[in-house]
Image 1 (cartoon, helix red, strand yellow):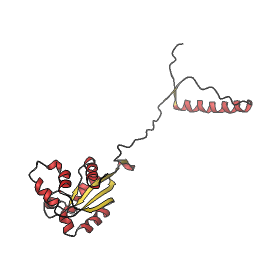
Image 2 (spheres, one colour):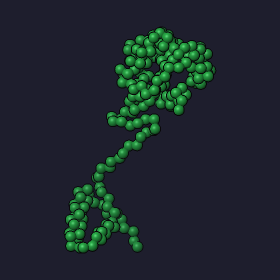
Image 3 (tube, one colour):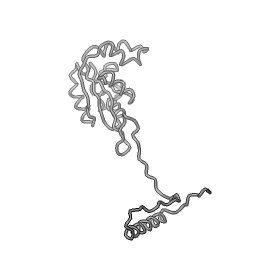
Length: 204
C-alpha cells in the first residue's frame, strides 16, 4: 500500500467540512434504524494557521503558579533574641501582616547549641561563627513560616540590609536592629534555604 501524504487545508475549510459531516450524519441517522456510526475519515487533516493553546504546569511543589506570572511561596523568618528581649515581637509580627504576609506557622523557642550550629553550618569557617552561635542561643526567639507571592524576595526586601545603619527607612532592621550582629530578624535567601530551615527548626 502506498503511503498517503496528509492533506493540508485552511482553518475555515476545516470548519466547512466539519459542518458538512455533521449534516450528513444527521440525515443518515434519520433514514436508518440502525445505530451504526459513520466511518471515520481516513485522511489526516492538518490545519494551517491555527492557534495552539498550552497549559502551563506547576514549576515545583514549592511554588504554586498564580495569575500575573507571580508565585505563591513560603519563606522562613526568625525574630532574633535581641528583638524578643527588647519587646519588639508584637510590633514586628504586626508589621509582617500589614505587608501582606500570611503567618502559616509560628513558635517561640530557645535554640540549643546543636540546633544553632546546624542552622548556621554554612558559616562554620567564618570568623563570626562562634559569636553568632552564642548570640542565637542567648535567649528565646520566634520562628515563623511566611507565605506570600514571591515571598523569599519580598521578605528579604522588607527586612533590609544586614547592617541596620545601611538599611533603608521602613525596613525592619532599620526600625528594630541595633547593630550588624544584633539586627532583629533573619530571612531565608532562597526557596531551597527556606525549605531546609523550616524543616530544621519546625520539623517535618
